[in-house]
Image (tube, rainbow, N blue to C red; front, top):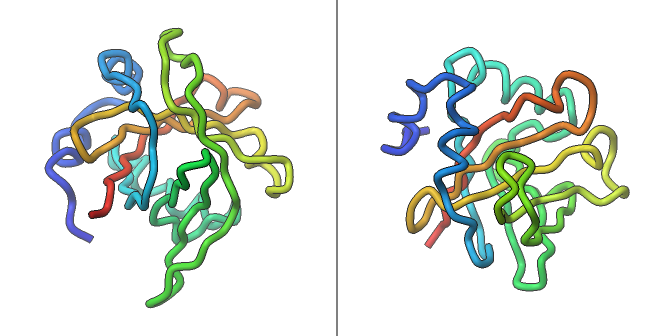
Length: 154
């Protein structure tokens, strides 16, 4: 997979810098369509995140598909196929980062553990790219935002 220009820059940032960057961005008014995922951040995080997602049932995560009604689904790559797994909801909420609006992706209780305790906050990085921060609502992970990008597909 080719690294995007946005990721090239962000991959040189410390994990702690992502909250500050997120605070400078605006919430998209809505999210709709298919978005391709890209892991960003320090090399250790980009190495461990895909492996950790396999352990949590989202192995091969490659994006999200958002519907106009605020629902959506995660996209997972399995060989040459993309499958849809773990339904999501998206809504404009107050960010835990800075108290300003963001689009938040939540995982309904029908999803397996730990996903109902996970929230992805999204803000607009550029015209077609969202910066996401994943927060686990448990233990020490609650204070550790895990960054990723979502690139809107044409």
